[in-house]
Image 1 (cartoon, one colour):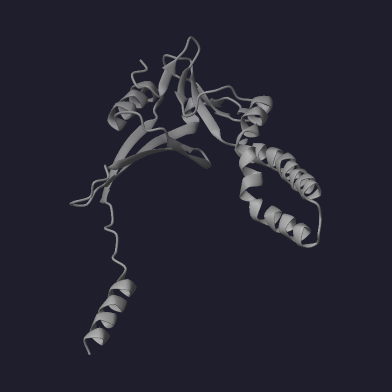
Image 2 (image 1 turned 180 degrees about the vertical axis):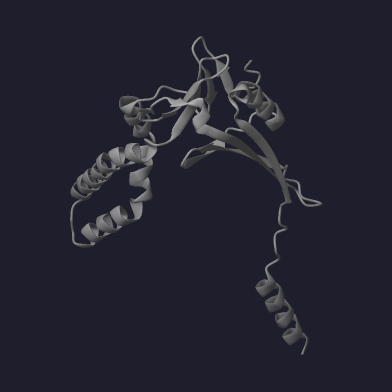
Length: 216
């Protein structure tokens, strides 16, 4: 039944995969280790100020190097669990079980799966396909994004989908999967045109004034 790349049918469930990979606290911590390296880089300015102040105070280069290394290490050790905590609610996939006609569903987050819910808890699935088209003369191609909204009882989950195909095909596949359970699937397409870059009016007016004064 799964006829879209984002839908993967297994023996026990059909999964809407947003991001591949295992889930759970351990895997979430391991997956956060790499991105946490950006935290010392983002906080590099205060660290450089400390190094500059120590240099002016006459500290030796080896001492400055050690202090900067300790600060960067502390930033990483503090930022790693903070990033893991912030990523924990991220939804990796939505599982519908059984695979044929789902009677239940659950959200699998980076920190682990939620509890199974009855399929009737899901009232509606909304897909929003946004297309930003180039203006006339623009050499950049059109940009498409796809967002998913799960309308559950009492809560709405909004997810950004990896755009890798035809939104209509995904909508049809979800409708074929969830329609028998009474879930409404809606696809909406929004089109807009990319704004033209505005000329630098200040530079233009300044140039005109300069030319006029030179002529006088």
